[in-house]
Image (cartoon, rainbow, N blue to C red; front, side, top):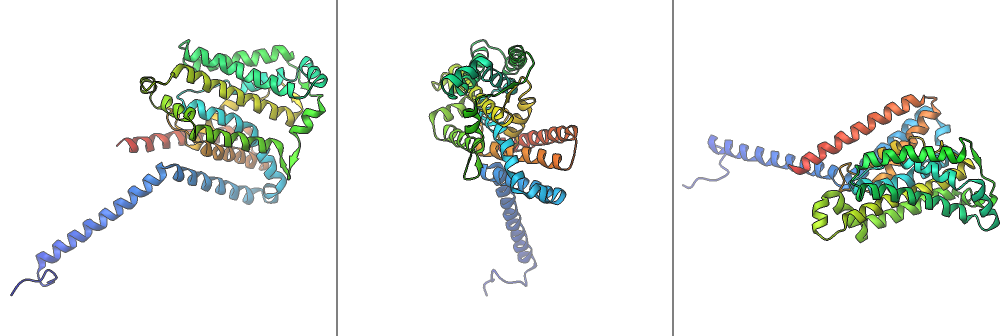
Length: 355
């Protein structure tokens, strides 16, 4: 009589089947764990994590500040604050994705705000058109970015040092031009446009959305974006592939400079002033938002959507602290801890991807 494979009377066969079942169960669990890790490493997984973090932060805000946090006015306040630093962060995303960094964004913003609100510029704007102020801010931002780019790409200066020098120089020049005074804006047509609302949404928030959308298209749907990823991932390989790495690097710093010019216009409209003190520590907030969003500090990977979420998380965090009368020192301490945690998480995920 032949032996049946389902014969449970055989102890050795039962043990083999149990071992096989255990192995299959372990394989399924490992597959699930691997799938979860792959999801965390994917763009969708990172964005879902940021959404969860933002929702939890909002829940903390509602629990601790109640209606003061949940009101429509407070939501618009958060969006207005996020718009200015958000535009700077979009530009910073391109620079970091391309393997660089820019510590001078806050100082460039201050210089652009001062230059576009001098008496001469405002007089010219009143005599001709308020767009003159816009042109001045964008030109100053692009010029500073061009200097940074040339020093780094053709001068061989390390990005950290070049932009640190620009930070000091631009802030100092802004103080010289303004004589350390706050310059009041007296061009009603300019403030009318930038403080207007469309369907109840502030103009500067719409401007931030437009800049973010253009940034997403530029990074994900154009040759410029693909070259940025290539330059940030492996500059030598990008050069061998025919990309002019130096010229592209200059373009990236000009781009972040233009973003600083746009942000300067936003902060001028919010405060109706131009000042050398505008943009203090914006470089820290912008880099933090970009890193939290999932862009690699080492370059080669960037995400505009993640940067937008990173900006919203940091702005909401600041708002919650302010509503609960917490000190700026406590805010800075927590932001620093979040940045360190984000970088450590990036390194851990990157090491797993390489294994």
